[in-house]
Amino acid sequence: MRRVHGRGCAMKPACTRQSDSRRLLRQVLYRWFSWWEVLFIGAQLMVLAFSPSSYRKEPRATVLQQIYLAAGPSLPGFTILMAIFNVVVIRIMVVTAFAYGLSSFALQAIVRVLVLELIPLVAALYVAINYSVPGASEIYATEWHSRAAGAVRHPLSYEVLPRVIASVFAVLLLAAVSCIVSLLLAYVAIYGFTLAGAPAYNRAVGHIFDPAVTLIFVLKTGLFALSVAVLPVANALRHFASTASRTRVELRGLMQMFSLLFLIEIASLVGNYQ
Image (cartoon, rainbow, N blue to C red; front, side, top):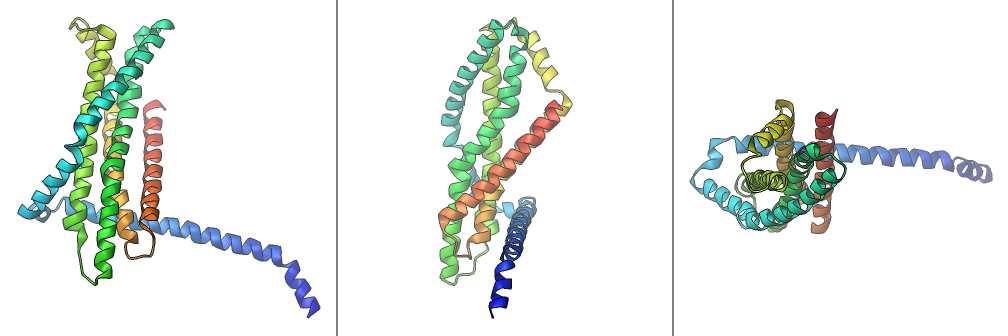
């Protein structure tokens, strides 16, 4: 018995390594299957989004209501905040460019930093925090109580899809309005309240938004919108039958969303500045 016990003690490091490897493998498989389930739910939502039956009288009214809730109350406040933020950043960049004799590059820096990179990301995060994540938490609570009560529900068409469409619309609307405001403020900061600089301004902005950059910008904004719209609700639907707490489900959705937004931003930077 002593020899067996001694051999067991000697083999403990190997057993520990095997246990760590199995634990790591289980974590990798769990992450993979969780992303696969999210993609599957997202594919279902995309099919429903392009189905005419999703826009009949009653579902259409729900979609319009959710679009208003997602974009309507947020649009004035977000536009004002982004205008103030743009004024501060544009002023700093213009003064810095003039101080170093790089005034000809001030407009390009403003457009590339604010319009191409910051505004779509900020709009997506604003909609996620203000609408999609609380909406996913509400769906999780509703579905959990319904399942506990034994009710059979089909939430994708009537509850989830309107919120997803509203989130996508809100991100696109806030990003478009903020980009227009940013471009107008950049023109005023560089050329002042005159139309004399319009030809040079149009030429510089048109040079920045070539077909490749425009395509990357549109794809990135669309992927941002889909990420903040689908990931929180998909993560909530994955866990509403489990014993996970509401806060834990929200944190998982946020972590997945931030990870995907980070990867999309890196891919856009590589495409724009390779």
